[in-house]
Image (tube, rainbow, N blue to C red; front, side, top):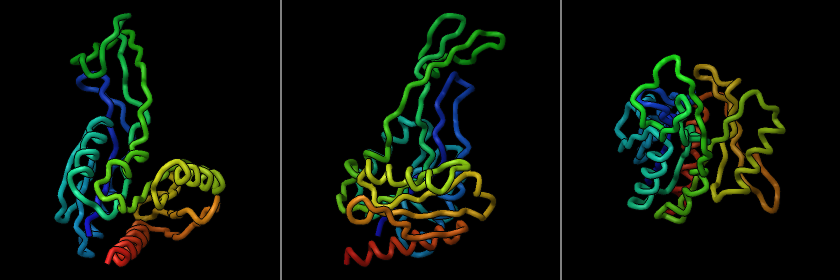
Length: 229
């Protein structure tokens, strides 16, 4: 059984030495890769350049920007057949459109280094949601998809509503709801949602640590493997 896992976070260049990025380190995704390899699954990892990488043997692709990640996933998913996708990367909602320096506009990343004292205006543009395209990009149309929905100090009801909205909008099968305010070290509380009949939402699994999250995803992978036999 083949599993693709994304990890780390996008960087969007401002100039040749600066970028807009997020806090994602890729540690959880790397932990999941190593755990699933140890359980004898074939793992392909698509990780950002700065992310912590898996220690065990995986097929590794790297990306930096949103466009890098989208292009790599479209190519890899179209060329190879995967049974499961775990999309844990922190994808940029915005990229830099233009950088205006002292009244003159430049494309993002085209200026070597903006000099200190400059008057700078950065214009952002919204990015499409990569998770919305994973099913259509996938060569294997029976591939099961696990997405992550990160919040920060959000009430439980809000987390549930966001998980439901993601499941409703996309063709994914599970949403891992996690909150940044609760993640410390090995502690990583999650509630994994899936659709039920009609408009119902079910918290199918719960865990409190990275290890428990890895065990749950392994259980789901085993169920998928059993269904395909």
